Amino acid sequence: MGLSGASLAIDAGNSKTDVALVGADGRVLGTARGGGFQPPVVGVGPAVDVLAPLVASVLAQAGAKGPVAHVSAYLANADLPVEERALEAEITGRGWAGSVTVANDTFALLRAGLPDGAEPRGVAVVCGAGINGVGLGRGGATARFPSVGRISGDWGGGGHLADEALWHAARAEDGRGGPSALARALPAHFGLTTMAELIEALHLRRLPDHRRYELSPVLFEVAAAGDAVARSIVERQADEVVLLAAVALERLELLGEETRVVLGGGVLAARHPLLHERVVRLLAERAPKAVAHVVTAPPVLGAALSALDHAGAPAAAYARLRETWT
Image 1 (cartoon, helix red, strand yellow):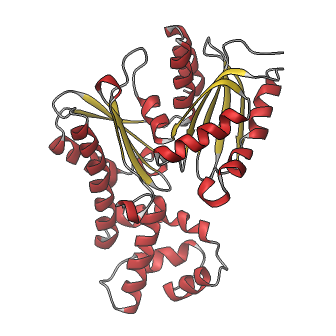
Image 2 (cartoon, rainbow, N blue to C red):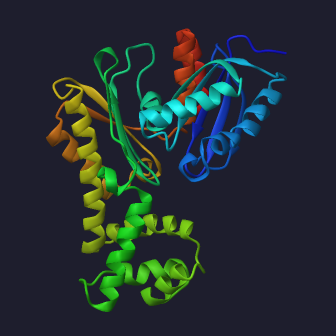
C-alpha cells in the first residue's frame, strides 16, 4: 500500500537519529529512533544506511511500503552545500520518496521555533554537543556558518565546554592555573579523587571519550556555585551564542526589525540561569529588537513542519502536528 501525500521527516544528529512518517493532515503515522549520523567518519553511503531500517520501521507502522511523497531530511554533518548535495543525491537514490530536501539540522531547530503559515524569517543557534547558527531572511536569503570545528572559527558546545573545564581543572591542580573547584568536581563525577587520576583514565581509555560530554553539566553546577573559573567558561559560551545570532541577523539585514532568535540543543534548552540570563541580556544589547525563544521540542518536529510546508498543508495540520510533540 502507498501513502498519498505522506512525508518522511528525518532529524539525524551525531548521537541519535529520529524518523517520523507524517500525513498531509499533520497526523504522525509512525516514529523510529536509531544511532548517530556521521558521514565524515563512515562515508555518505554507510551513513545513509543507518536511516534505512528506520524508514522501513515507520512505513511498517503505517502498513505501507512506500514510496512517499517527500523526504524532509535535516542532517548533522551536512555543514557545507557540497555535503548537502551529496547527501541529497544518496537519499534520492534510495527511492524512498518522489522528492527530497536536505539541509543542516540547525535549520530544523529554526523551523520548529518559527510561526507557521508565514515566510520563514529568523535566526537559530544550537548548542548541544557542538555549536552552530543559521538564519533565513526576506526572499529566501540565508545566513550560515561552516561549523566544522576550530578551523572554521567555532568555539563552544557541550564537548568543547567539557574540554575547557578539563584544561582549567588540570592546571588548577598542578599549579599552572588559578584555583578552581573544577579540579575536584570533575574527577568526583567519575568516582575519582584527583585530576591526575582522571587524566590517566581518559588517556588510557579506561573512560571512553564520549563520557567527556558528561562533564558539561558538572561545569554548570560548579559555575552556579560561584567558582570564578567555571563562570568565565559559561560566560564565554553565552558570548559566542549571541555573536552567532547577531552576525546572522546583520547579514540578513534583520537587526532593525523584530525577529525571533531560536535557541535549542541540550545546553541552551536546559536554561542554566547563568548562561540563559547572560544570553538574553547580551542579545538585547547587541540586537534590541531580537526576541529570544527557547525550543525544547525534538528537532524532528522542525523536519516534519518543513514537510507540511512542502505539501502546502492547511493550518489545522500544523496545529495537530505541534500538539503531538507538545
